[in-house]
Image 1 (cartoon, rainbow, N blue to C red):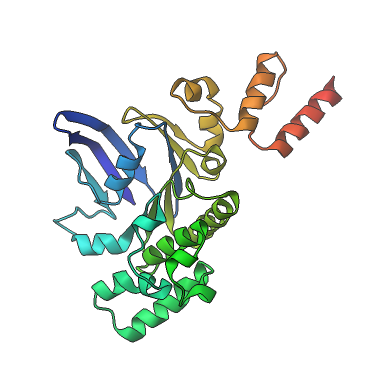
Image 2 (cartoon, rainbow, N blue to C red):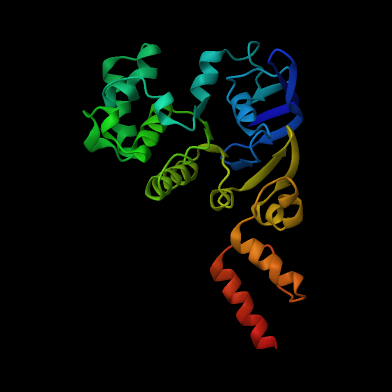
Length: 276
């Protein structure tokens, strides 16, 4: 697991700006954790701390019971934890798809045979095999994001942090990337997804709501999103059907506001009609 103990982080711009404040968090292996929050809440900074791109100003982060610099070096951390950014073009470094996937392995001095085998495995995982010899700029936005993910997957990470990976994509690209993320989680990779899309947030095992650098709400999606008024108080919109359930509830109709799927709400309303 990854454990954050009293973690805080500040930028100096040049004045000190406290972005993350005294976060205590455990991320379990195999979990699908979703982090949400309005712009400026600190969620991207938290993602960079979890992936060890940034180091805490205060507190410590422990990975698999090991302390960075003491029990584990940063090369091994990079193998364990990968991060995918919002804009895939910021992570693509080569002129050919297969070369981009191989980049990290080449820097770790893997043999040509090992690199070839790993590319074969990963390029099929992300459904880009037919584009193997293509320049990345021939790919769609969704395909480029999958290429960025492939460049991390080839390192065989145990944890994958994704910072708004679908925000620049069209609906088809978003759907493809989310399906890939879900599949990777089902295969055992721990997912930490940072997003502002509620339809993605409800897919997680657990949701963390950040507000002004602090944990505001935490729990299973159905428990977090039933707190409609709290969610709205920090500038977020609950899932549309959760909000619909909330509005129905306000009319003194006894409906479960933990619902967020249209099918569930239809079923609930039909049951209410039968009772009436």
